[in-house]
Image (tube, rainbow, N blue to C red):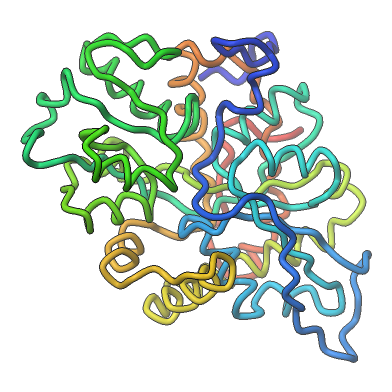
Length: 368
C-alpha cells in the first residue's frame, strides 16, 4: 500500500454511526472493566514523570504480553514508583474510545481498530509503538460437513464481527478463491455469519454454523467440541507471521511522558523475552491472569494448542498491517487511508538497541 495518498475517512456499509462496531480486535472475556488489582510498588521506588500510567488490554491469549507483564510484575518493575492502573476490554472500539477519552494512556490492541482509530482521527489520536503478538487465528470446521477448503462453498462460517480483523481476513481469502460474498450481509458463495466469540462454541454445537475463522482461544474451544483445524492463517503470510496485537499510545501522552512510554516498552520487551524463555511458566501465568479476570481458567485441551499457535515478538510487522488495510479496502469496508505516521518506533528501537536486540522497521509508515 502506498504511504502517500489523499487522506480519507473510514467508510462502512452502514452509516458513520455504525463505525464503532466495525474493525474491532478479537475480544474474549468481559466488557470494559477497571482492574482493581493493586500493583506492587516498592516504598523507595522513584516515580517517573507521572504518578500512574493507565494501560488497557483484553483478557485474551493474544494479549499475553500484557497479562503476563502485569501478573509477574515485569511491567511495574520498569516503571519504578509510577503505578500501573490496568483496565480490560472486550472489543477494539471500546478501547479506542477509552484512549480518546484519556481513560487509558497505552493499550494492547489488534490491527483493525488501530487502523480505524488512526484514520477516524485524521492521524491525530494514536501511534503504534510496538508489536506484541503474531498468529493465533485458525479456520476450524465440522469435519463431517467439510473435508477440504473447496468444501466451504455453500457452508456457514462464523467470524467474530463485521469488519473485525478475522472478518477482513476471511473475506479476503474468499475473494482470492474467486468466490463472491456480499460483505455487508455475509450472503454469497459462502455464508459469513458474524457471531460473538463468547457464543461461537454454542453456535457450533447447535449446528447453526459449520465452522469459524476465529482467534485463540475460541478456535481451540471449538476443536475441543469436535471441530478440526482446516487452515492456520499464519500459513497465508510471508514467514508465517502477521500482526495480531500492537501496542498503541495516545500521541499527547507520548509527547508529555516519553520516559513512561519507554519504561512500558522496556517492560514489554523483557516480558516477551521471559515468555519465550519460559513458555510453560508463561502459559500458566497467563491462565492465572485470565482466571482472575473472568473467574475461570482455560482447560489444558484449550490453552495448550492455543498457546502454541501464538508468537510473542516486539516487531510490529508493519508490512502486514499495511496489507490488512489493503484487504479491508478490497472488501469494501475501508476507503484507502493515509497510514503515514501511524508508527513511532523510535522509543522501541532505543530500548531494543540498549538490550542488544535488532531494531525493527515501520514499512515507510513512520512518523516524521
